[in-house]
Image (cartoon, rainbow, N blue to C red; front, side, top):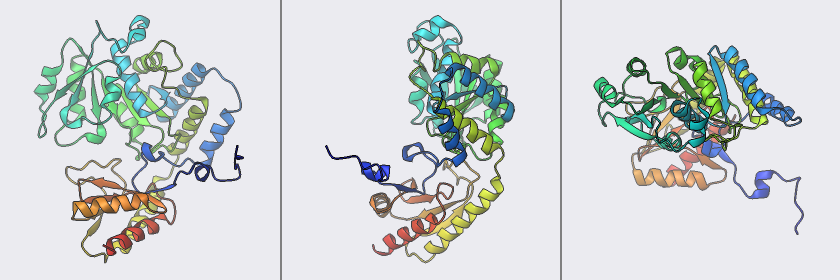
Length: 380
């Protein structure tokens, strides 16, 4: 057997290419890069055995106090948060119901969602055994549609902030209608940081349960997430989640290392200077725009808010918008960036627009990204 070359970089040893991330802090390319304080906390946590249930309870109490919300539960991802919050709304705290999920016979088994907000995380809600009931159309959603959709089988309303738009009812209106009928509202805010005030914003607005990714704007372990909200509802989530056995969340395991890392990441983000970040990101955007300025056949500009009908979250981050103006040329460019050396990951909007995010880049990578795009486009 060939000896293992432990002095070699792990990714090189495995033959896995490292990626320059100009897309965003996305799970499929590794979430975020963690600060050394977070890594240190994870390493410390790995050196002892603890009661995980106690660690989850006390870490939740600690974070709830720091953030200023009634209760917090750490889960292994925002996706897991969608499943356990749905399970909590369906089965509550009843052991016999918790045990039976995803068999929802005899339980409230419908969750209402805007048709416009349907997305690839639907499966995490449906995993709890519920049926999604759509309201609205591709153009509009009216209050009477939500009112009419609520019935005896309604367990919750789920609201995806990243897909909120002019086709959705405003969250305050959803909360008003749902709460008037005694129905809880789950808010998926996985990518809604910065600003850090969002950690409290949706709970303060009245949402019963709010979900954040731990591995994006918080800068924690990729396999981590937060559920925040009403104490009784968060306690129900805990009963439907790891480390309890005989529950749908048992397989969604969060380790002591991820718990310690996320606690430290939240402590850091609550004290972080976002203004300094914004200044850094603006500089990177301007550098990329300067490099791309004279590239023929494209248009490039700075965008700060999501352009109409586009969903870019979190909102308060400047980005570079590149209009390639040719779908085939755009697809080829994205492919060549992804397969080049170093590989570069970018986001596309529609079929002919590329978005470059500065917050997921390391120092100097903005020049590499923009120069590669310029050179590839000039060679066509």
